[in-house]
View (tube, rainbow, N blue to C red):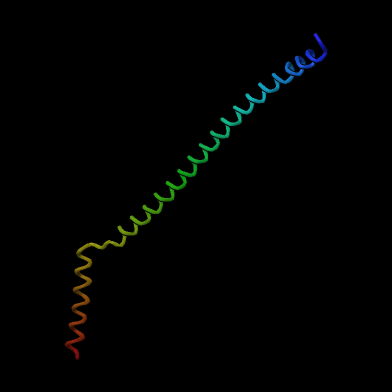
Length: 91
């Protein structure tokens, strides 16, 4: 064997384990990044869902509190009508 073939063999024997290690580490880093991205997307989705639920609950409670009982509306209208009647009769 020549010196050149020994050097090529030594270079391959040295670089092959380093290349395998780099590939393995790269694979695990990509998997970790995917998991981190998925977790972040789930957190953002949950935040948007919570915000929408809060807004809907606020709107529903506003609509429910603004809704008056039919007796209240009739009595208010009757009171306003009688006040207008009194003011017209006083003139």
